[in-house]
Amino acid sequence: MPIKSAFSIACALLLFSSARAQNLLPGFDKKEFAELLKVSVKTAKSSASYANQVSPPERFRMVYESPEMGLENLWDLWTDDNGQAV
Image (cartoon, rainbow, N blue to C red):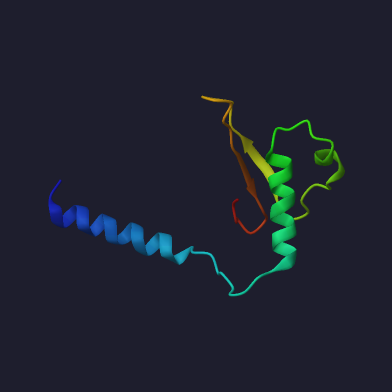
């Protein structure tokens, strides 16, 4: 593939991806922090008693849970209605 063509494709991808960038706000949002803590507790595969006492996140829902691999490692993908992922 010629360099000029590859450069054009890279520029097009960069423009497309930046058009969908998230709008981040400065400062600390207590509500967002509490929501992410709920996601964190629900992601952990723990038999701790506190995990059942924490309410599920209101904004995010789990859309994917990876299989366990390696040293019992796994990860979850949570999204909201605006397409934000955690």
